[in-house]
Amino acid sequence: MIDGSPGEKKPRVLYLPGEFCVHPKGNMAEVGRRQMRLSYGFEEPCRIEDAIGYLREGVDYVKGDSDIMEHRRQDRR
Image (cartoon, rainbow, N blue to C red; front, side):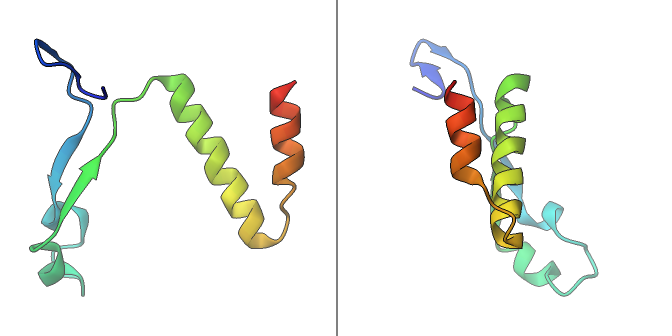
């Protein structure tokens, strides 16, 4: 359970109104007023480091510099 047991809640997800996620005078301002965003911002530092690594792998893949499978093999050692 992400949020803990019913008797001991540990909320880990934040709701952000979409209007706070776009520039108020930008071309997404109107759309932002009708959206919501969820933030999973309560991770431990080691999990954030993992996520940064996954983002790096994604960028490398898109750039064509990907050796994702080699990274995964090394991580398993």
